[in-house]
Length: 125
Image (cartoon, rainbow, N blue to C red; front, side, top):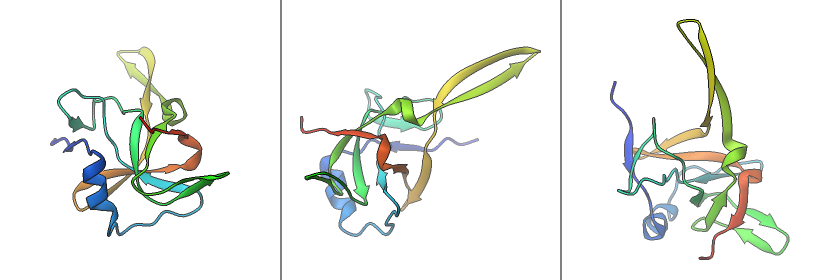
């Protein structure tokens, strides 16, 4: 089985993508990148760690006087995206946690649709 791979996106990449992004989320959701913490910048969806820092690609959210718009770097509450997976191998039971996202592929690039409640901060660093 071939694994999906893609390169992490930076702010310049996002600026190119957001100008004509064809999908607009509804009901307090945004579309974000799926960058990982991999040192080499390559994402392997099956076994990489989801990065806390992502970029909003489409949609917007208002928090009081602060507005999150496409291109905004945000910090994701990864614990809110975690799901427990139960396993059984040779009658030995176990469980582990994985990040569960609602994937969206646009022009061959994977993004995620997330609820605004998983965004914990704007990252101005």
